[in-house]
Length: 327
Ligand code: BYC
Image (cartoon, rainbow, N blue to C red; front, side):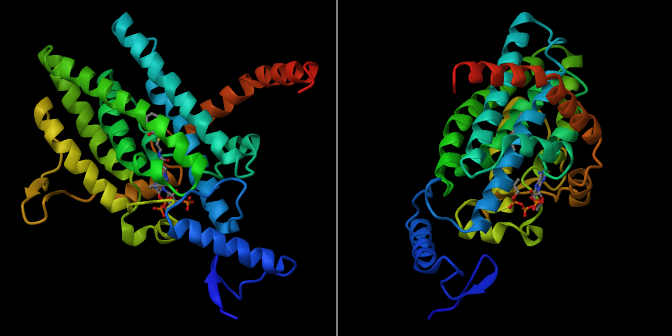
């Protein structure tokens, strides 16, 4: 019998107790991946594939929910009713994205209450980018333009990720992210055509957010422990560095149009590569922020935990309502 490595273990196509069913499931799973088709919740899948997806989807969901905080802080301070309405709608979209993603994690057998516990107890991660403060209203525009721009680069390929419910959730998320990115650009465009003080505010915000945005794509490929397996399973379709490059190539012409200088002296077009060369982000800073030592980590998690506790009565009321309807 053929012996090969599955889930990091040497196996002979059988698992005690599962017999032929296991080998059949395994073969079907591998065929589905090789044919670039979607794995669905009812299908057999290796436990490590399931665990990888729960890890990534939960982190992604947590990022959307924690990501409501930095911009949410500006809803009451937005400079006009129009800006307030736009920002309010955007932050609500992010709540929706979190909900689709928690729903996708549930199709893998994850329990949503447990995922929230894992987040507030620091057992699961969320994107490093949301641990930086929003100091001025220009940050709202820069988050839309750069952070949502980076999110689009990362998430458009996830519309073709191998797990069906995650891929389908991403289609709607990406449509909304495109709108978010445009609103950020439009806000900055307006400010760049405003007063000298507004232009200075935009430039200062771009300087602060540029490098943390590049870090969103994760560690460099050589230091990315999950990439090889996630790419073999087509959970990830491109490496961290490929997507970082794609983002830089997409953003530089937009910065030129906007009239802002990106804070990287090494940034220049390389005609031989057909891409922009750029400097390396401070990956030691990324590691510190991921480990919990960023400027706002403690505050973000504390507020998330408080919001969850304050919402206990809503969950209790929903459960009582469902029980009365016999659901
Ligand atoms: N921040 O082996 P690697 C949004 C972790 S929300 C924190 O390369 P992988 C928005 C990584 O998890 C968009 N942690 O991992 C919302 C791993 O740790 P574990 C959020 C990071 O999974 C509101 C370890 O480092 N997007 O756009 O192959 C308002 C080693 O990394 C980060 C997603 O979640 C980071 N930046 O690749 C506005 C996209 N980078 O789990 C906007 C979905 C790495 O082994 N996720 N880590 O303990 C992904 O595409 C991938 O998970 C990543 C990382 C590219 C992020």
